[in-house]
Image (cartoon, rainbow, N blue to C red):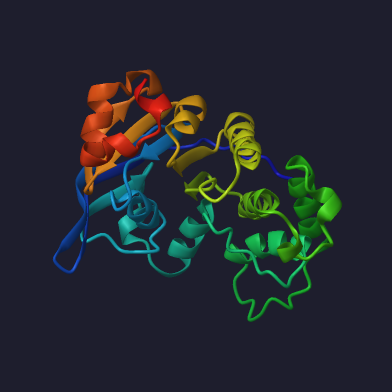
Length: 264
C-alpha cells in the first residue's frame, strides 16, 4: 500500500468558524490550528459541537461563517471535483462503522477507492488487481486479512471498526476524522482500535482528529486535547493540563458524571 509518509502534511486552520442550525448555535466562532501529523483529541459533553466540528472539516455540512484552511487550500470555497478530492483526503470514521453489512470485508474496504475514482455508477465496478492488493495490505496491517471474504455483519464491533479504518486508508488521506470511534466498543476492542489509529498516525504522519467520550483514552493516546462546551472552545492544551479547573470548564454541571479517574 502506498504510504503517505512521503507527503508534506499541512496545518489545518479554523478561522472564526461558526455553525448555526436555525437559532441554535452549534459552534461559536472558533479559531484553532491543528499541526501537521498531530493526534488531536476533542472532548466535551453531548451536544458540545464535537461531531459538528468534524463534519464541518470535510464539508459534510457547511459553515455559517468563517473559513477552514489546509495549508494554502481554502476548504470552505471548494466545489465539484476539488471538494470530492478534499473529502477523500479528509477520511471520516464513524461510531457506527458505516459498512455495507451484506458485502464482504474486502469489498467494503475497496469502497474507499470510490472516493477518488469518478464516473463509477454502482458498486459493481471491477476493482483493479492493484486496488485489491492495496486493500488486502490495509487489512493485513490491521490484523484483519484473514476475514477478507466474510460478510461485514458477521464481525464484532471492534473488527468492523478496523475494517472502517482500512477503508479510510484506501482513500490515501492526509487527515483522519474519527467521530467517537470507540464509543460503542468494549475496553479490549477500544484499545485495539486506538492502537491502530496511533500506529497510523506515527508511521504515516497522518493527522488525526478524534472525538472521544472517555478521558482516560484521550489522555493516553492524544498529543493534545481541545475541550468544547456549548460550541465554545474552552480548553486547548496537553493532556497533562487537563486538571479539575479545565474539566469544570468543559463539563460544567455534568462534571459529576465524568468517570472518577478523570477527576482524581
